[in-house]
Image 1 (cartoon, rainbow, N blue to C red):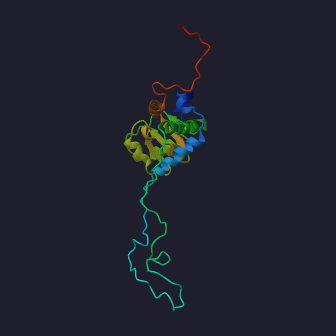
Image 2 (cartoon, rainbow, N blue to C red):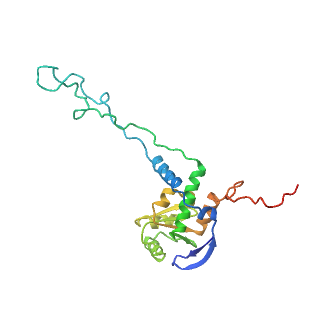
Length: 225
């Protein structure tokens, strides 16, 4: 599969062949959804905490006598029914962590990358290097490429000048290829990747040794004994 390569002026300068194992995978909605939910759940700290009636500060003395007052019977001031009392079934520190097999996580990422290419929301850049941090220059590059909304810019390695140039642009995020994840891809309208970042992604999430590409073996070929 061939995709066009653009320069920073928005002109097509080349075409490259990309791996179909990474950029031509059918979209698996259930796997992508599970991966996104898992990532967001694992990002939660789970440190919210509230006090029960046994933990709040206050006297345990009965507020008034049980009978002959004409009022509803009441216990201590720490009752959950009273202001400043304990919380019934309130949050306590817990872990929201979810597990997911490695191959499913990789499949979700490949599905997200393939969907961006299929929807024409993937732009491959020849290179993205800035001599010094300049937000105006970065904004000009994005405008030339037709990026008018949110975008995720992926480089092969962390580029300090690129990061500093884009950090003040709303909706623009920079990440190295090794830190690509499903949520970041799906939460941005456009995906910009340098050629080196594409090759890095293919190296990480491409076909590993001993793994096929889902091809059906040819059973009609003669077998040599």
